[in-house]
Image (cartoon, rainbow, N blue to C red):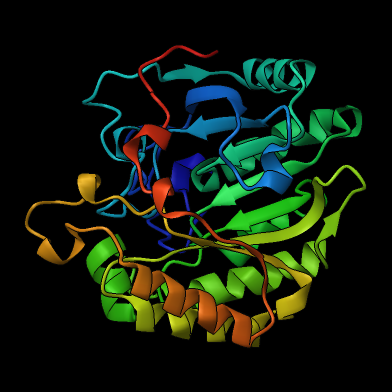
Length: 299
């Protein structure tokens, strides 16, 4: 698929054998970090941590991305990123499981979806812990169908309702339409969220929404759209307060501040109207210290 890559809604058709597409990723699997991670939602991290594998590149390129050094600039910035084979990815997955990971968490996986599907077909039967597809929400239905039966938990973002905002901040004016279509397909595949007796999530959707400064009304429209797309009480939702302005460009003054308590509480209140259940964050979550150090070798 990588000689005419159409894995995401951009359908840029890049010949990734010879050049990088919009996602800036080569055809070979390139990862920046693989380690137990304790800062996901409690149903994901649990006691031991989530077995996170961070892929390089991204099909969105959000201007405020906290992982920008591996999603945008990994060719320019010194990180621990390197290209790995299918067999190496399998070894990393099994090592994370052996270390006690409650799940395997593929972070920003969209542009490697067919490689992930190929690998999971080889080891899914022996893995016996949930596999998570942790993505930006900008997904192709055809790509998601390729993953059916291989992914236990979808963990997408739903970033914007406004086409204007999604174009300005993520260069994807059709984001809301594509994210809603993807969410419906994810729900078709996994159904209702299931939490085990150990308090850990086993299957379903955990949807994330990051509240942005000045965008509380857009957040309200997003929540309405989600409730129109899937049963509000059958998924988990995480309303995130962790936005930090440190990664936003100086030219975008509106993004160079943290969100206020008024903005965040407004969005939480809106979520309650639809009967959503899930997670919220404390004010202290908006710290750069929670961003992984991608310069450290972890695999």
